[in-house]
Length: 63
Image (cartoon, rainbow, N blue to C red; front, side):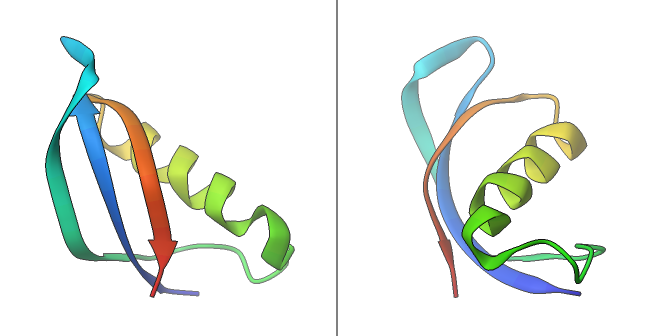
């Protein structure tokens, strides 16, 4: 399944400095059997695994 999300993130070099706000991003290939309660955590880990320059994610919202 595909989900549209928004979030803020920091870089690996400065994990405490949230410098980028992503207003909308399409995250694809999310398995349909993920429980709704675990979806934000799963999507956050998916984004981190696909983008190694991202340090931390905060304010992740499913749109």
